[in-house]
Image (cartoon, rainbow, N blue to C red; front, side, top):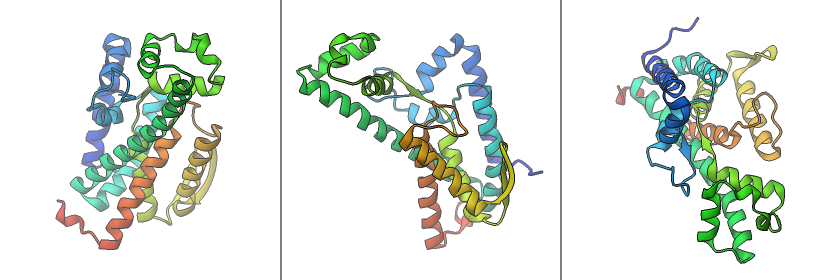
Length: 252
């Protein structure tokens, strides 16, 4: 059994404290208002949410699976990187996940806004309707946007993003590049598969889910684009460090 490393242990503790706070304070609403990542056009958005959303979770299974993965893969990666380098890598992967997800949200938001603006709706009026909470029931909008486009437009504006999954996907990529011959198994598919095949397979499934909207092993509200963003950021950092032969001792 892997020994939990110091940084991973502290990250798990912070996540658990935030989860307990979410459950205990205001029925979860206050913590979500403060710390979950809101869409930047929404009045509830605050700059610190780009960081704090990584320590928020939506339920026991969500935090349970994420913390299990952080312990399993984060500890051996930290042993290779050292404390400061690992923390930089972890936070960077989480930020990369958030930025790609926000970019995707902006695309969906801009598509809806452009269609409504083209139909004669003023942007200020559209924002007021979105903020009212009754946008889904505005019969004028249903004449411009199809149900799927309308649903995405409204959910992007009013939705929140939480979870350490993006950062953990980066760590998973690092693990696969550091320990490619290690054998891993999925809970629902107990067949040993080498990390160099297993991890790209997981990323490929996330990509397919992001494109098709079809979930395989995760809940339907999973932010698959964020997973891809975290994995891509982790890969780019690992590629750069390998190319420059970045020595972990410079960070310790």
